Image 1 (cartoon, helix red, strand yellow):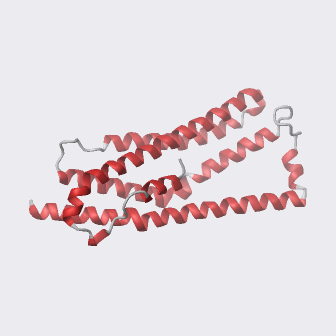
Image 2 (cartoon, rainbow, N blue to C red):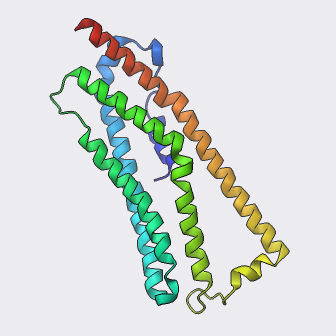
Image 3 (cartoon, rainbow, N blue to C red):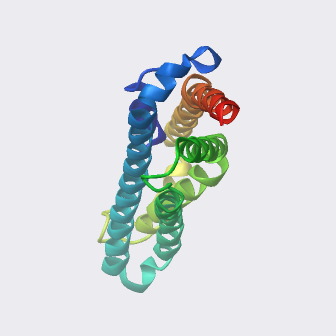
Length: 216
């Protein structure tokens, strides 16, 4: 699941109003919103892990077909499974940190604040830790396939021959630029989510927590 899909899940929910939120409304809608948030995070982690496992299986099958010549694909599989493992760990972590159903409102509010702050850190750091290993694994996989005639229809050295062709090199540069453009769009979308969804919701919950503490 792409982070843009995660963004769409959030957009289907009512935008938080932040510091101006009404306390009575916050208390009334708290349980419903926290269930939606937990469900969205679980769906994101599980779908991302499932897609990653499928991609790893495809790479593993190609490696099996190529035999020993396809050994670099193992590196691509390891990198992909590393990202998968992270999201599986996220799912386990979120489940382990979930308060009991009979927990007090204060405990639940504090748990949601901690979870949203954690998700905020993930969105801020997604560029350096998630995209590079996936890009490297794709390059390794594609380059390894290009070196094996008979399985891909490409002769040995095919990629290097392409790079010597000015038109093809220009096309590769265009594709690389397009990839960078879409990654920058994803980064901007993440920043918008922080500004429109996560940060205001944290502000709402902190306001609710202060109200609970002042009344206790």
